[in-house]
Amino acid sequence: MPGTPWKRAEVFATCSGRLAALAARQQAERDPASTDTMRQREMFELMLEATLPEAVTYGVPQDEPLRWRSAGWVETAGLLADITYAGDEIRTSRAAAALDARISDCTGLLLGG
View (cartoon, rainbow, N blue to C red):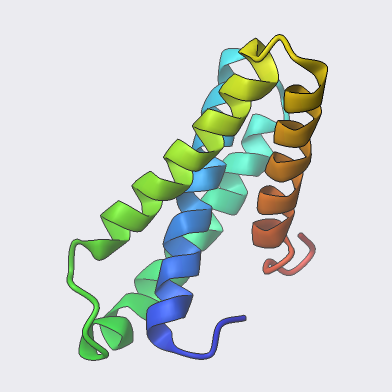
């Protein structure tokens, strides 16, 4: 867990974006895991909400979490696109490994994750 409120807010927002993108893909594919993914995303939103006031006193601009969330979404969407459309087994497997690592980094912060 990051040591400063600034970094905690960044991690929570980024993970929220990552999980939102993954859940969107899962929902599009009618994957029942989307329910759990959305629940995890909601936990990161709650942690962000709890951390944000202190992070703002550390100097985090009020709209910065939106940028962090968007960065997490874009990163995940790009990896999902590579997995689906790359057409290259090496690129696909690298993207899948990177996605697994990033999602695990997030879910590992949750109790029972």
